[in-house]
Amino acid sequence: MRHHISIKLKITLWFTILMLALAGISLGFVAMSGDYVMEDNVKNTLMKTVDGNAKEIDYEHGRVEIDDDFDYYVNGVMCSVYDLNERLISGQIPSSLRFSEVKFENGLVRAINAVGDAYFIYDRRVDVGGEAAVWVRGVAAATGGGSIVGIVGRLLFFILPFLVLIAAVGGYLIAKRAFSPVDKIIKSVNAINGGNDLSKRLGLSDTGDEIHHLAATFDKMFGRLEKSFNAEKQFTSDASHELRTPVAVILGQCEYLEKKPCSQEEYMDGIEVIKRQADKMSCPISRLLGITRIEQGTAKAVLERADVSELVEVVCREYFADKERITLHTDITPGIFADVDISLFSRMLENLLENAYKYRRKDGGNVSVTLRSLDGSAILSVKDDGVGISVEDHEKVWRRFYQADQSRGADSGLGLGLPMVKQIAELHGGSVSLSSELGKGSVFTITFPSQLSTTV
Image (cartoon, one colour):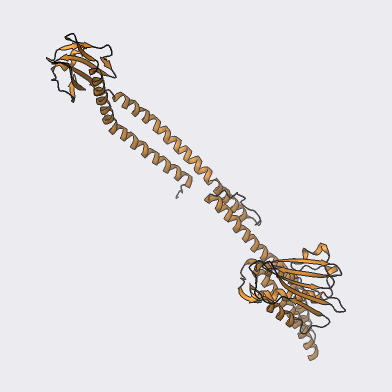
């Protein structure tokens, strides 16, 4: 069975291996370069000490005088003074080292082996006056800095593994914290996937990093899924609600014609009933499909520059061409252009006109259509003096299949026209509003955004 390594563990292993490599390289570098660095340090200290002591030698009253500031042993350097015959004047170097056998050479640092150890020796000739001169010799162990290198190496040997451990633990904790939203995403997705509640969300704040941005994207996706699912559920509910009666009438009529011998006239009447109910079914099906497509985003508006003023004139004229007991009033500002889907815009206006006509006064009525331009926006209003809508029903009329008994006449529609008006307006980037009073009529207003322009 194949075992998968988590991303957190992979990141931790990567940090650990990287730190181990850096620690190994660091120790190797110290081991290789330490001797060279410390050797140069010993040589520089040796030369500096000898040159400094050379300044403390004078020649007075026919003899060599060595000041009290002369350092015979300092910073691991042993110093002594010799005459030109290489006889010791001052200072002492252990006889076991036998440096007296080494010839003097002015200003040259040399490496000498003595008693199995390595030393550096440096001689400086000092002219103290006249023909008088002396030698100042300094000797320092070549491994004088080795102890420091060893200490540094041991410190690194213990500190670097500790740093590697800190890096591994810190890397794991950082990775765990960074990927903790992923665990929450997995649990939330599994909960949503295993249940029927699509309203659940991950609820992670978008802090700007990739994982939180992914969670926010998931929430948007769940929102669209919920909206799509609810639209499908709503469509099924609405369709069954609206089609139940026509289907029942059709089935009943078919059973009646099938069981009972009928004359040709009765058959024709039965077919007429079936056809009328089928037509009644066709209208809500078409509108429900249109609304659902708009909700799910499958129906896209094909926008084109159009003369909205002329379009409103044509739609009003054609709709009321065969309507009786109704008076149409129009106040349309000419030359208003906008980017609209002509088919959807015409359907939206027809729905408003149909709503005004259906709920007119029984003894006739008036419908007023106005179109004007204001601050770069176009405002379309359809006003009637019909039965009106009560204030408590103003928000409800935008729901599908909603019927308010007090605001509807006998020839009420399916309750799909106004929801479609709202959706088409929003699809065009516009908004809808309603002003109505029961018994005094209604005014529906569509306002389009500022991209609408007026052309004279």
